[in-house]
Image 1 (cartoon, helix red, strand yellow):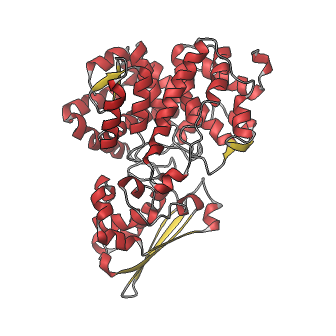
Image 2 (cartoon, one colour):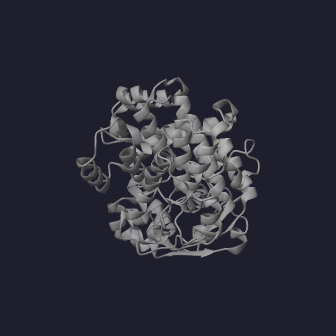
Image 3 (spheres, one colour):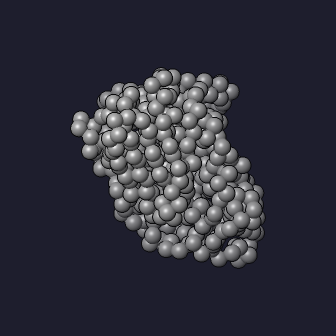
Length: 456
């Protein structure tokens, strides 16, 4: 395929991916990319402690060739393809992975596992990884922003394949023509992923992000072998009825190099779907006005929640599993009111089985407020109103969800999350060493040696 035959927006993206150096990336975008990598690694490790993931790792690696890439949290290594698949799958299990409202999903956990695994397989530097993650994230996020994907699709496993592929192409030093071929190949290698998996609490949904890393690396291998893609695969897949009927090519390149979507991402401190965080913030605002910060749950008459559409869609009340609990606003509010906090234990199997929590779930009235939906994604408004049996009423609100660029978490909060997730898996000394190395990512000269230095 001739590069001249491709549409201008696509050649622009390919040239940007191939030609942008680390020094060309803004300080804010570089720092955010560093934190996306650092945040993802303990999130993956914690997710890999789940029994389903441990069983998956054991069965998958039993027939896999040896390799040098971490299977993070398992104390094992594998080839890059296998590590990207396993780490990507574990990374969404606890719903603590980074995300981006403008990208309409979670680019980081689909790009980072592929980039880290390939770097450990081939010995690329930390600076190479930082550049690859920043560019793979940025360009795939822009493609998603430019599309109006149908809500029936889950965004995982779709544009994430493009992001992982671009990260691989950057590491491998693809020139612009190769990068163009890579984007066109990767665009057709996504999944027909179902959003209903969220609402049903179906854990097959977690393979979607593993798929992105695996197929992104595969796309790069295909291009190296001479495979070709369509002339405008992005436009066809994202604008002609596959994932979406509407795609704005101009929006994919507007502000390219000056506006960085990666710098507008969010981090999560609550182990639950992102849109529920807005309701949690509103509840925390309400509880801050209550003496002692707690309400007697047996005295709560009802909980009224008004939210933007995507938050209101997480309305399930028939919660039967820990994973399903992570996609229910009624469960989140009920469990936090009962336990007094939103940690992992508030969403585990014991919390799901608790009859007092389940009783409180049924007292939540969650509805969409159209005026709130109209303000999304720039704002994420939610109100929570709790009416007590005594007639006393408490109110709370969220305007911008904590963790968004306009309302960011502090570095201390992100560091605390890193150690809270990492120490149970690796112990304090190893977690501290890993944290220190990731905070000085550019000082790592060889990721293969880094993989050998620590067994995660």
